[in-house]
Length: 31
Image (cartoon, rainbow, N blue to C red; front, top):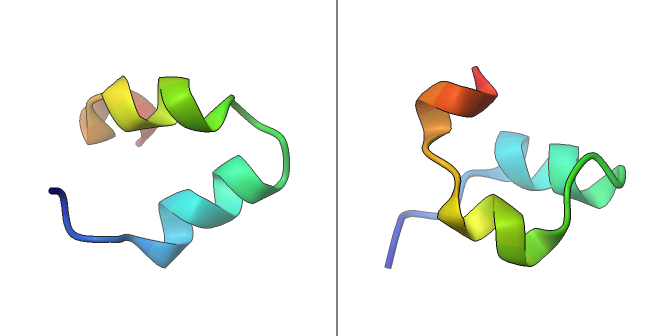
C-alpha cells in the first residue's frame, strides 16, 4: 500500500476526484 498523503486526501475530500480513481492516479499527474 502507498503511504497515506494527507495533502492528496484533502483534494479527494473536496470532491476533486472519486476516491477509487484517486487510488489509481500517479502522484505526478496530481502535481
